[in-house]
Length: 162
Image (tube, rainbow, N blue to C red; front, side, top):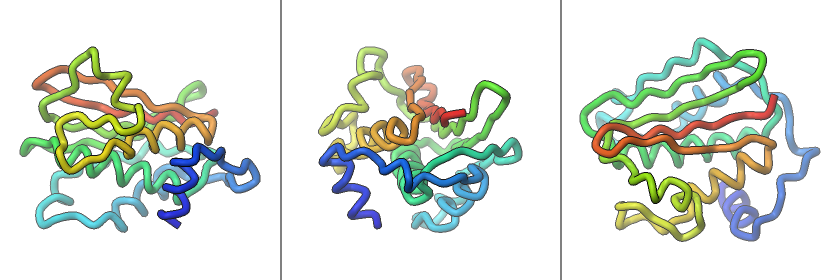
C-alpha cells in the first residue's frame, strides 16, 4: 500500500474520488500513532489532543502516511519539548496540526519546503515527504501549510475539506 501511494504520488496521479470514504480524524490519527514505529522514548514526546474530532472524506492509508511523515519530521527536529498533535473543528474548518519546538524554518523557505526534492536540514531526507503530503491533501480536497518561527517552533496545519 505504501509503495503504491508513493508511486502514485511521484507520478502525480490524482486520487480516484470513488476511493474516498467518510473517516473520523480521531480514529485515523490514533491508528497512525499506534502503527508508527517509534524509537525508544519518542512516543512519550507526543501529546495528542484528539477530543475535537470530525469526519472527512478521504483515503485512510494516505492520511496515515501523511501523519507518519509529519511525525518523522517533527521527531527529527524536536528538542526535548512535547510534540503536540491537535484537532480542531467548527462549521468552517476541520484541522489537524502537528507541531515541534525545533530550529524552525526560515520565512523564505516556507513555500519551497513542499517542492519535490527540497530538503531543509535533514541530510537523510530526499525531499519527497512534504511534497507527498501536499499532493495527498490537495487530492483529497484539502490543503497543508506551514507556520514557523526560527528557534521556536514549526507547525504543519492540515485543512480537510468541509
